[in-house]
Amino acid sequence: MLGGAATLAGAIVLVKPERRTIVLQVMKLLAEQIAEAAGEARQLEWRGIQILQGVILPQPENPSIKQQVSIILARHATPLLAQEIHDAIEGRFPTALPNVRELRRVLEGNSAFVRVDSDRWQFGGEAGPWR
Image 1 (cartoon, one colour):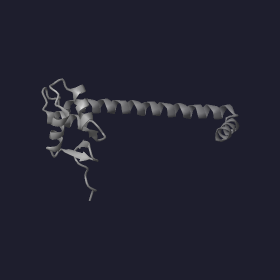
Image 2 (cartoon, helix red, strand yellow):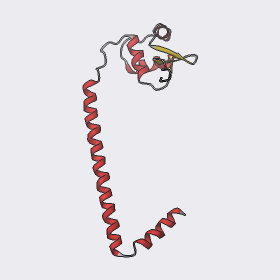
Image 3 (cartoon, one colour):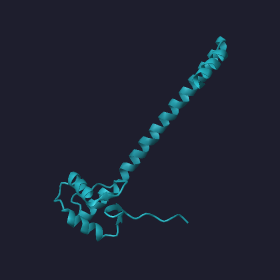
């Protein structure tokens, strides 16, 4: 219904050729401005990526179990089970794989890893309310 009303209003307004010309000029200017803004956004994104590449640290060659767990948990937005962490380590690191029991000992013995729910883990604790 709204589309039909817009079409009818457009037909009434654009009956005269000079009005159509003005509308087309305005639409052309609008399209040019949108294209220019998109180009500037791409340039900003590219510049940001270049800056980040200079800051990102390379992955350690032989990370410890603690480092492996930290990397896996830091890259997940949701808490993971120990078995899920184990599977992710297996898929990501070519080094000797700890068993799930060893992995749980590392999780429980380090304050950087926080137990969420009964068996899920996350990297770091939740911050309290901002004061």
